[in-house]
Image 1 (tube, rainbow, N blue to C red):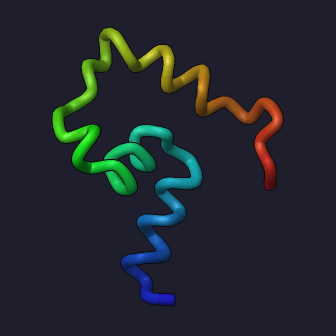
Image 2: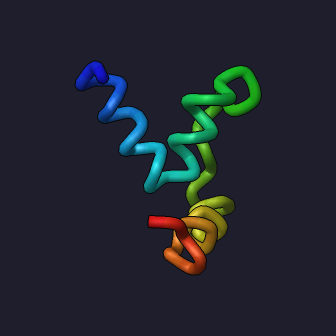
Length: 52
């Protein structure tokens, strides 16, 4: 696998924001408002029930 693609996929595996921007760029084309969404992404990103 290409190194740059591997890096992107690794980043997606730990970041909901990265998944949104990478796989749905037309939907998430503006920066996320950290003051609004930061806590939500933190909660989503926790390891509760995460497959390893």
